[in-house]
Length: 267
Image: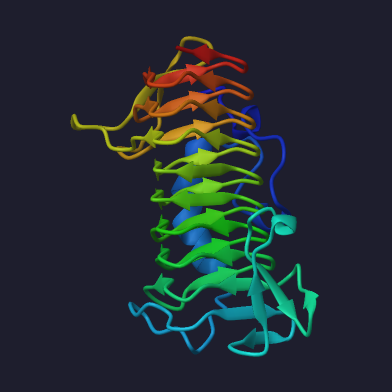
């Protein structure tokens, strides 16, 4: 039996995800349960103005009282840190969720929290859950069965699939994240790729922390990146990388499958 548990990688889980992160479970069991968890807990709240597969023609805003298609303005000043902000009647609305014109959705099975910005050109497939204050930037591609956590960033030309971003996890530029979990405060350098498909037949097997052989039971598994892991630009992880808390991947590095303890530096 493996000694690996998701608690080895993540020290804080949003309360709404408590039913997904079961005490003592290995991290790949989270991915095994992700599809059913999303489908059983999601509370879709897209507005009627959104038509599947058709880019939104005008921006819409979600406030505590419901969706608005008019009666607000969007601003972007130095004081907002270059981030789009919603104002109503001359006052900022920090809890407003803004979906810009040009964003596209495939169906209505999307759940939005508050304070989210979805920029023009993003495409989001359902079912997916996007939690408070997340940023979905221009040309981001969110495929089905994803959870984007509080203050997380899915950046320009970044694709994510069947993955979880915990609080403040960021994939800001040109990344691919497949069948992976990014811990709290993870930051992926531009061009980071978390490969998820094993070419050879069979499931992904790794060497665990005690030297034991561990079968994840999955042919598709990307990377489990512990809290505060950092990756340099154009780095690549092979399927089945389990990288401990506060580890670092140097730019242009390739990470082989397996378990890496906390504070590992990979060059």
